[in-house]
Each structure stands twice: as C-alpha cells, then as structure tokens.
Length: 128
Image (tube, rainbow, N blue to C red):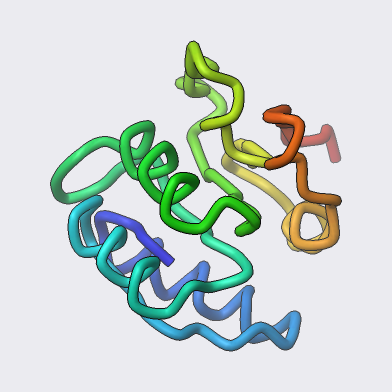
C-alpha cells in the first residue's frame, strides 16, 4: 500500500484488513513503494495518487513491469481523476474515486484483473 499521508494509509490499511487482506508493507512515496513491490511480489497494490515523492503514474507503470500479474487499485479524488496512461498496459485495474463507500472498496478488491488486457475501470462515488 502506498499513500503520501498517514491518515490515508490508516484508512486503506483498515479497509484492507476488514476485507481479510494482509498488508505486507506500507510506503509514502513511489520509490519506497516500488521497492516493496519488488521485495514482496504482492497480488494487490493499493496506491493513492497523492504520494510524498514520485508520481503514482510512474509507480503503477514500474510496478506493472516488476509484477505483471499484480492487481492495482489507484485511489484518487473525484475532483482530479488521473488521466489514462498512453500505454494501457500500465493502467491500474481500478481507479477508485474519493469519497467512496466501503462497499465500493470491496467491489474494487473483487474486480477482475485487467493487467493482461491493459484496461481499467473507475468506481465513482454514488449519490446517497
């Protein structure tokens, strides 16, 4: 899990554990996050677009090269959704827009991987 601020990491860590995922490592920035991906080879990477250093786009691209079968969920503010990368093979599997509901996070965790096809989907916040 990679997020630039502690509050976001606490939230994401809690949601992952709530859904019975083990958190093998946490990072504040892209460089440290990529080191964790290379070391642990996780099945899932959850990253926020706001990182202490580096870019989430570069993190996803490098992580995809290091672990091509890994699923990637990118969390972003609804006011600033990330642009899709030129190489769709470097896109996250899901872009989850904040604010989101716990159910949306669970759906993102269960969404099929698109890493082989290079696609991605966005989960937008729903009206109450």
